[in-house]
Length: 403
Image 1: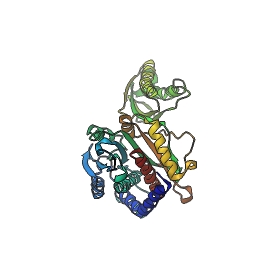
Image 2: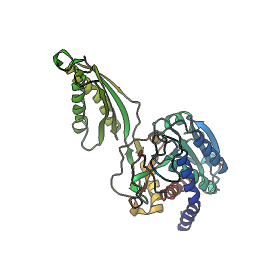
Image 3: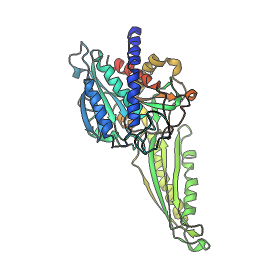
Image 4: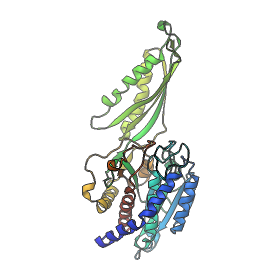
């Protein structure tokens, strides 16, 4: 893309900025939870049709797909070109918003506390922008508006419903607005980027009785305590020091009074890893260690894990494409060089497993404006200057890929 074309693209996005911000605020004020995004989906479909895209609704439940066919001169047919998929997640969280802003959520107990309202607005703006430039696209762009990312449940049914075919998808890109990173910065990194996530449950069963006579009982709480401590060695002593992983216990429930030994204790937590072999090893060994400790203390352990989400792994070539797009948008100096991996998870991983692609982060925090609340917080918000940056990076990448 020439400098004049790049300047023209930036100017066009600037012209669309007020509508982009208004659209984001509309979605923010009208959030819907996973697989309940009915009105959101209707709005998306209507806007895609207004931009001239072919629209399919009800994909994977409440998902929407828009297909933009390029008409660049020189291609024998649009089918002869490649197809790029742009993914945006659309669901909100069961959070009561605490922000006092004009676009505050109007749905009690539901809030866009992770930036999906921005992702949806960015993708719709990008679709309209590229529809006006379809004569520069030798190939197709699919826009996949995915439900239920917060439940890590929307990507799989969309793929089962054929989103990666007709036409076949050759590459995938997507973004996440990221409040821990300052607005104006973009994080792009090849290889494992978001961690896998597996939720586990443990039930430790013993024999309850009087707390003053522990020798007559089998105390599952003591076994549970030893399991919590012992399983931390799965990372410190069974995972390579060159790898990164997490084993976290988030819940423990058991007992009814201070002088009663409980019959059972229930625990749950999460396992995070970037390497598929680490993920398998940790998931298996946690159950083995728990059962071994429980047995040694005369108790029993029942272990369940999953279903979970694999790691997001970025393809080197597509990541380099996105890096060039980010440099054209914000400059190379605004792309941090340090390790940008995140221990959170996202079922964008399934799209990245189905086709080579890149998931990247667009900074959306701004301490100078007190926009610092973490994701999933009732005070989460974004600096809306991140929205046109997201559109521009995606536009540069799409135009280059289908040039």
